[in-house]
Image 1 (tube, rainbow, N blue to C red):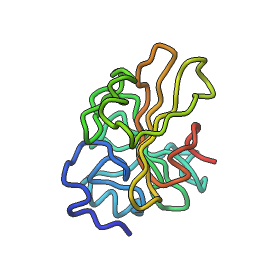
Image 2 (image 1 turned 90 degrees about the vertical axis):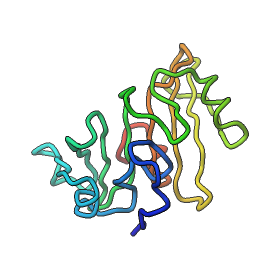
Image 3 (image 1 turned 45 degrees about the vertical axis):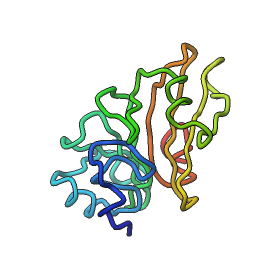
Image 4 (image 1 turned 135 degrees about the vertical axis):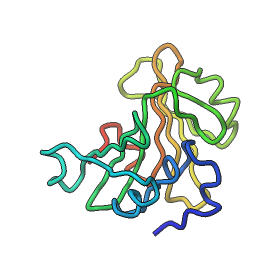
Length: 156
């Protein structure tokens, strides 16, 4: 399990572990205790090994759970920012400026001119991933465990 402490000094911002105080690597119960709120799955989803959950504590954030562990957290909601202040709706140019040489950029398979932008954690097991569209705008933020954080569809 991931100890939260110093790894998540900035609550309410996306990083390589997700959106604190919940984090990739926690069980659903651990995340619920950290959030002080339930992570609710759709009626048909909870029985599947990999599914999405949501919490009223973090509206607009999807939590991907695989076999009882959080593997990633994601949003398309501009109210949430990364630890460095990047939000959905910001320009890809801003992401490149903020993250500099740490940023890996590859073509997005669903957009003609969009990109997948990622910053890997020092542990080599987590990453922050951002998607840009054809207009050069960030449309998704997500943080979590590799390789799950890189999947475009959430569960694989």
